[in-house]
Amino acid sequence: MLLPLVWAACTLAGCLYALHQNIPWSVALKALPAFLMEAAFFYALGVERVRMRIEKLPSLVLALALVAAALAPYSQAALAFHAFQWRAFFWIAGLAAAASFWYLLLPRTPASDILFLVFVAVVWLSRILYSLYPRPNPRLPLDALAQVMWFRTGLFAMVSIRRPPGVGFGFWPKSREWKIGALYFLGFVPFAAALAWWVRFAKPHLPAATPWTSYVAVATFFGTLWVLALGEEFFFRGLLQQWLTAWLRSEWAGLIVASAIFASAHLWYHAFPNFRMAAMALLLGLACGLAFRQARSIRAPMVTHALVVTTWKIFFS
Image 1 (cartoon, helix red, strand yellow):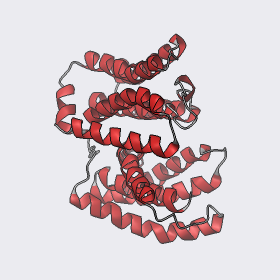
Image 2 (tube, rainbow, N blue to C red):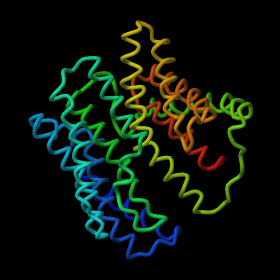
Image 3 (cartoon, one colour):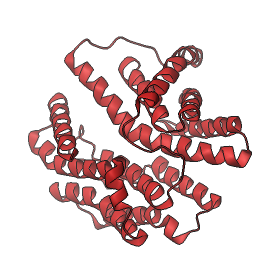
Image 4 (cartoon, one colour):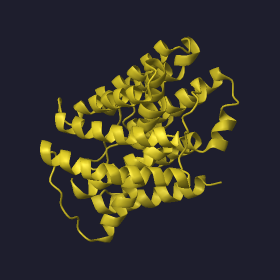
């Protein structure tokens, strides 16, 4: 099994982060079990053979398991730091239950699907979950657990209970998907550079040539690929773009409208309304939508998305 390797990689990454950020070991080691627990749940989601075993469970049992899995990392971290609150526990349980039982209580119709996406997006954009998690150190925000948990719960509910076709869900792209994703990234770069200059989005800079910079680049790429890009490409390309294409009876219309919705979700980035970020996100949405259209799998736009975010983090922030 690959899970021990995943845990080892997460532990190494956590130790390097703690060293670089001067986080006391007493704090880092208390937080580590919650992150390893979340890594195990995310591993079960992304590895098809493991997920298929889970999907053999009755839907009711699976939904209950998703709620329990949403609560476990919070409970572990909160108890470790003596910050457990029943109010936070019940908020997490209620939101996770709403997502997990959605398709057990509502019909699998376009209206239910759209309401599900809106619900997931509203919870995400409101940041209501962030305030529920303890913050034992200014440089160790445990609300990262909230982000991953919410992505994972929504993805599990849709992938394993709703089971939409034609998504191409998974962690590791095939060779063809790597190539498609990289090519659309290269096509994105000149247009993005022109747009960034026009809207005064950001000024590029050369990063420091240190081993830490290389580590950050690799960690940013795979962290984005397996969390942010996986979640956003699943919802915006794997679901929304496909649904809009069917409803509007046009692949181009579905691609453009899904990209516009993707851009509008970025209006809340840091400060509302962030039109510069939305403009860049629109261009990224179009590039990712084209990659999905060619590959018929979200794994290709995941590569494009992750390369863009990594480039931005290293050269523009």
